[in-house]
Image (cartoon, rainbow, N blue to C red):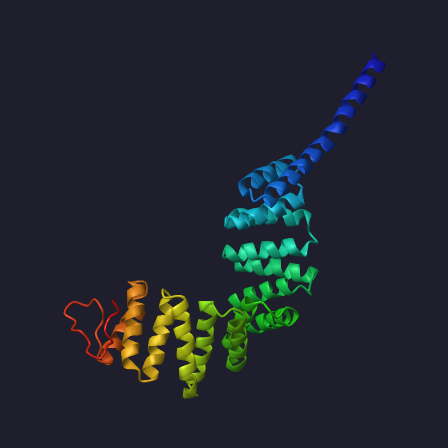
Length: 305
């Protein structure tokens, strides 16, 4: 009887020893299938396969990381955060996964966690321009402009053809009252991506800051704001600032038109700014479009048909 029990237990143990590798093999099979679906552009199928992989093997870090990437692609940021959080538990030395987690936190408006994750990533790979650029962006959002400048300067020096990095560096310079440096950075961004409205707007803002002491920059600011609204006609903030620049250049007709453009776009979003725009139009002798009883402004150009 004792011999029978011993043989039975041995056999049972053999079954147990085989079961765990089988699950691991299943997880790898699902992982590979998920990657194949991803490469074919079948995102939902890829997510399903990768989810089966982590169900089979919850410690499959690469499957979790791939899930995070796919959820990020679908703009499902909370799920991306969850997947990346699982991934870094098992890929603790993977700087890219930590960076992805940091930017997922950033997009999920969790700035403190984003900063911590990106600092971890930078600690693992301090020479990565992408990681340092992301870290600089988050530092700027946190108000650490000097720290942001250090990281963003490193990034653009390592890889000088990324307009977004130049823009973020320009904004950090501007916040640090380094307006001349901000202008150079924004000019670089515009040169790299001349059809991006926000880059023209940021350059216009930097020029506008120079007009406070150097009025000769007014035409430059106007020119960049005009390019911004031409590329993005629904950009209310750019129309608002353009109105003030036109006024500073004594182009009251154009100023009133710009302020009216802003009011048409804003429509109650910022009552204080809207009141200021209306006051400016009235002070210049213009009429607020849509106001009851308002008379046509003879100074304003005729409406386009």
